[in-house]
Length: 181
Image 1 (cartoon, rainbow, N blue to C red):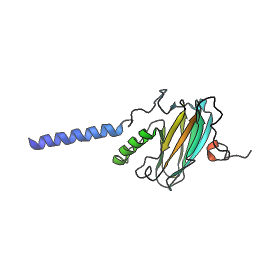
Image 2: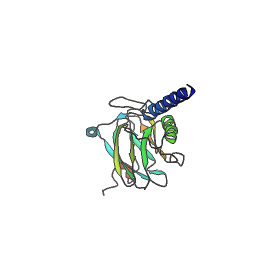
Image 3: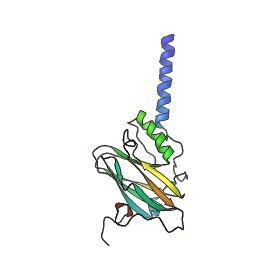
Image 4: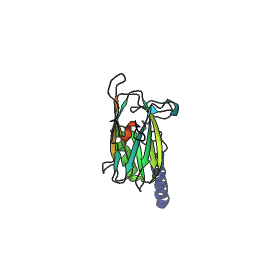
């Protein structure tokens, strides 16, 4: 009998761990047209501009600081210039820290949330996001060891109607680095 109870307890523990590992992790990510603390998934036909983001094996994002205006829908064109797998994940600092702890325990976890993308070395993808609230939105790579190594950055969302919110001219983030003026 004792073996049977131990076996059942082990099965319950495994099933519970798998259920937690496969969810949306923090529970506050926006899906569909839902609005969250960081905004909501954008629609391709409403993209305001494109921001190029490069991820490298030196555990850095270029650029690591991006300025947008409240209400803007940004197409993040994300490239993994490295050889190892990297992620671009938008979230609050707290969400990212919590998600990173889950990733440390489940390093092979795959993601399908609209505010993130995982890319193998040499691959390119995109995230389209609408920033509906002024403030700071963080981004990071949550692959084990990468966040701790400093692979993170921030999007500063200026209140709509303010003059700010453009990324430095000529940087890859302003969407103009691919052509001459």
